[in-house]
Length: 246
Ligand SMILES: [Zn+2]
Image 1 (spheres, rainbow, N blue to C red):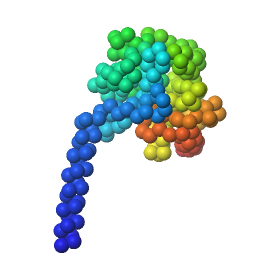
Image 2 (cartoon, rainbow, N blue to C red):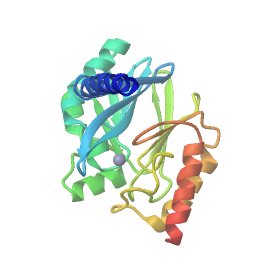
Image 3 (cartoon, rainbow, N blue to C red):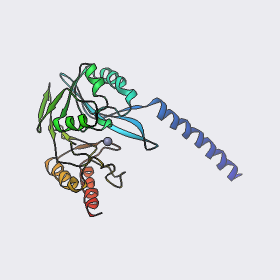
Image 4 (cartoon, rainbow, N blue to C red):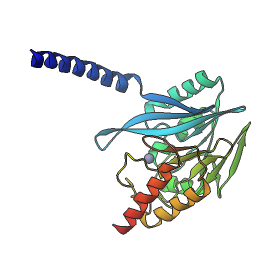
């Protein structure tokens, strides 16, 4: 009898779990996570090497419109992201920055341009995008740059090659929020992942620069999986140090 009841419980649990799983995949292709006042991590999913894989971007509400860092990996979510931004903030997106030339960062640039958003990448990202026939931003910066959009200030920082040779991070000094993008790993990662376009030898020294410069970070947002604090940068440094020895 106990086994029979356990069997029923397991079946019920499985059905509920499956329904939730289907719901999560079909109904929530765009997840929005507020992390601080006016700061929202957004997550979309993309099938990569046969697995559904999450990718994070960030949008920030300023007094003069919304800043989008990177674009959805799921290309069906470009319009929905803009609609969501408008319904949350009652403001339009005015500026976007892509943090390197891969499609999980840069894929929405053409769409953003068509919607009147000023698109930016570094010059290094632009030349990488051009050489791989990827979408290219309308505006480029040659060196680390400070942006002021309404009441919001942020800085770009190029630490050197890591995940790619052009990857940058973005720092919001007042809020102490570091958008690390794909060069920052999480404890769910056991290695540095895809470094085909990056540099394993330079990875650790580049991450060390990020750690030194932004050690006061309250939030660190990686390109994939769970955001957290400065421990993500320290953990990434450990992975990079191990990778050099291998
Ligand atoms: Zn990535």
